[in-house]
Length: 173
Image 1 (cartoon, rainbow, N blue to C red):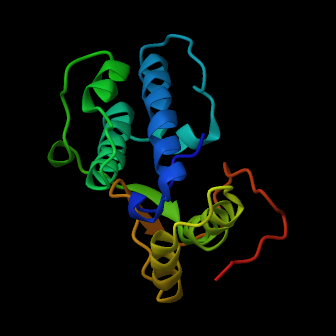
Image 2 (image 1 turned 90 degrees about the vertical axis):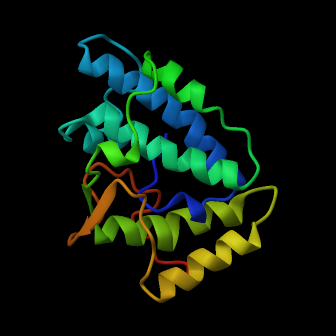
Image 3 (image 1 turned 90 degrees about the horizontal axis):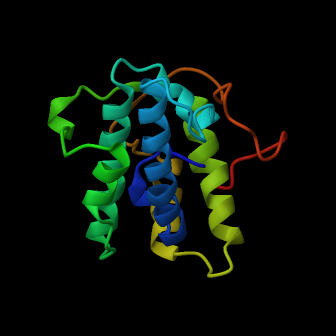
Protein backbone atom coordinates (compact mmCIF):
# COMPACT_ATOMS: atom_id res chain seq x y z
CA UNK A 1 0.00 0.00 0.00
CA UNK A 2 1.27 3.47 -0.88
CA UNK A 3 -0.50 6.61 0.28
CA UNK A 4 1.65 9.25 -1.37
CA UNK A 5 2.54 12.48 0.45
CA UNK A 6 3.03 14.29 -2.84
CA UNK A 7 0.09 15.67 -4.78
CA UNK A 8 -1.78 13.16 -6.96
CA UNK A 9 -1.15 15.33 -10.07
CA UNK A 10 2.30 13.74 -10.27
CA UNK A 11 1.09 10.14 -10.26
CA UNK A 12 0.93 8.27 -13.52
CA UNK A 13 -2.17 6.27 -14.42
CA UNK A 14 -1.04 3.12 -12.65
CA UNK A 15 0.05 5.00 -9.53
CA UNK A 16 -3.18 6.98 -9.31
CA UNK A 17 -5.48 3.98 -9.80
CA UNK A 18 -3.44 1.89 -7.34
CA UNK A 19 -3.59 4.68 -4.78
CA UNK A 20 -7.37 4.89 -5.18
CA UNK A 21 -7.84 1.13 -4.83
CA UNK A 22 -5.46 0.77 -1.89
CA UNK A 23 -6.84 3.89 -0.25
CA UNK A 24 -10.36 2.41 -0.23
CA UNK A 25 -8.99 -0.53 1.73
CA UNK A 26 -7.12 1.84 4.02
CA UNK A 27 -10.31 3.77 4.81
CA UNK A 28 -12.05 0.54 5.74
CA UNK A 29 -9.11 -0.59 7.89
CA UNK A 30 -8.82 2.75 9.67
CA UNK A 31 -12.57 2.88 10.30
CA UNK A 32 -12.40 -0.62 11.84
CA UNK A 33 -9.38 0.37 13.95
CA UNK A 34 -11.22 3.44 15.29
CA UNK A 35 -14.13 1.20 16.29
CA UNK A 36 -11.86 -1.38 17.94
CA UNK A 37 -12.51 -4.07 15.31
CA UNK A 38 -9.87 -6.20 13.64
CA UNK A 39 -9.25 -5.66 9.95
CA UNK A 40 -6.32 -6.07 7.57
CA UNK A 41 -3.88 -3.20 6.97
CA UNK A 42 -4.54 -1.66 10.42
CA UNK A 43 -0.88 -1.78 11.36
CA UNK A 44 0.44 -0.84 7.95
CA UNK A 45 3.18 1.82 8.22
CA UNK A 46 1.39 4.07 5.72
CA UNK A 47 -1.51 4.42 8.18
CA UNK A 48 0.57 5.49 11.18
CA UNK A 49 0.49 9.19 10.32
CA UNK A 50 -3.30 9.09 9.89
CA UNK A 51 -3.74 7.17 13.16
CA UNK A 52 -1.91 9.94 15.01
CA UNK A 53 -4.36 12.60 13.76
CA UNK A 54 -7.29 13.87 15.81
CA UNK A 55 -9.84 12.78 13.19
CA UNK A 56 -8.00 9.99 11.34
CA UNK A 57 -10.82 8.57 9.22
CA UNK A 58 -12.04 12.00 8.13
CA UNK A 59 -8.51 13.04 7.21
CA UNK A 60 -8.04 9.91 5.11
CA UNK A 61 -11.38 10.52 3.39
CA UNK A 62 -10.26 14.07 2.54
CA UNK A 63 -7.01 12.60 1.19
CA UNK A 64 -8.99 10.15 -0.94
CA UNK A 65 -11.27 12.90 -2.24
CA UNK A 66 -8.18 14.57 -3.72
CA UNK A 67 -7.16 11.30 -5.38
CA UNK A 68 -10.67 11.02 -6.82
CA UNK A 69 -10.73 14.63 -8.06
CA UNK A 70 -7.45 14.10 -9.90
CA UNK A 71 -8.71 10.87 -11.44
CA UNK A 72 -12.00 12.40 -12.56
CA UNK A 73 -10.12 15.36 -14.07
CA UNK A 74 -8.21 12.82 -16.19
CA UNK A 75 -11.40 11.10 -17.30
CA UNK A 76 -11.30 8.08 -14.98
CA UNK A 77 -14.48 6.83 -13.36
CA UNK A 78 -13.64 6.77 -9.67
CA UNK A 79 -16.99 6.36 -7.98
CA UNK A 80 -17.30 8.60 -4.93
CA UNK A 81 -19.94 6.28 -3.50
CA UNK A 82 -17.30 3.53 -3.20
CA UNK A 83 -15.36 5.81 -0.88
CA UNK A 84 -18.35 6.26 1.40
CA UNK A 85 -19.32 2.60 1.19
CA UNK A 86 -15.80 1.76 2.36
CA UNK A 87 -16.38 4.25 5.17
CA UNK A 88 -19.57 2.43 6.09
CA UNK A 89 -21.76 5.52 6.21
CA UNK A 90 -23.13 8.31 4.11
CA UNK A 91 -21.06 11.20 2.87
CA UNK A 92 -20.20 13.19 5.98
CA UNK A 93 -16.95 15.04 5.41
CA UNK A 94 -15.50 17.46 2.88
CA UNK A 95 -12.22 19.31 2.56
CA UNK A 96 -13.91 22.39 4.04
CA UNK A 97 -14.90 20.44 7.18
CA UNK A 98 -11.39 19.69 8.35
CA UNK A 99 -8.11 21.46 8.90
CA UNK A 100 -5.90 18.94 7.12
CA UNK A 101 -2.31 19.19 8.24
CA UNK A 102 -0.42 15.98 8.90
CA UNK A 103 3.28 16.76 9.19
CA UNK A 104 5.55 15.08 6.65
CA UNK A 105 9.30 15.50 6.58
CA UNK A 106 11.19 17.21 3.79
CA UNK A 107 13.29 14.05 3.51
CA UNK A 108 10.17 11.99 2.87
CA UNK A 109 9.10 14.36 0.11
CA UNK A 110 12.57 14.15 -1.44
CA UNK A 111 12.44 10.35 -1.26
CA UNK A 112 8.97 10.10 -2.82
CA UNK A 113 9.35 12.82 -5.47
CA UNK A 114 13.03 12.50 -6.28
CA UNK A 115 13.53 8.77 -6.14
CA UNK A 116 10.57 6.45 -5.49
CA UNK A 117 7.94 7.74 -7.93
CA UNK A 118 10.30 8.47 -10.83
CA UNK A 119 11.93 5.06 -10.35
CA UNK A 120 8.53 3.35 -10.38
CA UNK A 121 7.53 5.31 -13.49
CA UNK A 122 10.70 4.26 -15.29
CA UNK A 123 10.09 0.60 -14.41
CA UNK A 124 6.49 0.46 -15.65
CA UNK A 125 6.00 -1.88 -18.60
CA UNK A 126 3.56 0.59 -20.13
CA UNK A 127 6.29 3.23 -20.24
CA UNK A 128 6.56 6.66 -18.74
CA UNK A 129 3.70 9.11 -18.96
CA UNK A 130 6.05 11.84 -20.12
CA UNK A 131 3.87 14.77 -19.07
CA UNK A 132 3.63 13.54 -15.44
CA UNK A 133 7.31 12.67 -15.33
CA UNK A 134 8.38 16.07 -16.67
CA UNK A 135 6.07 17.96 -14.30
CA UNK A 136 7.51 16.06 -11.35
CA UNK A 137 11.09 16.60 -12.55
CA UNK A 138 10.56 20.33 -13.09
CA UNK A 139 8.88 20.90 -9.73
CA UNK A 140 11.52 18.78 -7.98
CA UNK A 141 14.37 20.79 -9.51
CA UNK A 142 12.67 24.04 -8.50
CA UNK A 143 12.01 22.63 -5.01
CA UNK A 144 8.30 23.33 -5.56
CA UNK A 145 6.83 19.84 -5.25
CA UNK A 146 3.17 20.13 -4.26
CA UNK A 147 1.88 18.01 -1.41
CA UNK A 148 -1.42 16.27 -1.06
CA UNK A 149 -3.58 18.84 0.76
CA UNK A 150 -3.70 16.91 4.04
CA UNK A 151 0.06 17.25 4.55
CA UNK A 152 2.36 20.07 5.60
CA UNK A 153 6.13 19.84 5.33
CA UNK A 154 8.47 19.93 8.32
CA UNK A 155 12.24 19.50 8.58
CA UNK A 156 13.60 15.99 8.82
CA UNK A 157 14.91 12.99 6.94
CA UNK A 158 12.91 10.11 5.49
CA UNK A 159 10.08 9.10 7.84
CA UNK A 160 10.82 6.27 10.27
CA UNK A 161 7.83 4.27 9.04
CA UNK A 162 9.07 4.28 5.43
CA UNK A 163 10.37 0.98 4.11
CA UNK A 164 13.22 2.15 1.92
CA UNK A 165 13.42 0.42 -1.44
CA UNK A 166 17.17 0.95 -1.54
CA UNK A 167 19.37 1.84 1.42
CA UNK A 168 21.68 3.85 -0.85
CA UNK A 169 18.98 5.66 -2.84
CA UNK A 170 19.83 8.81 -4.78
CA UNK A 171 17.51 11.26 -6.45
CA UNK A 172 16.74 10.53 -10.10
CA UNK A 173 16.56 14.15 -11.20
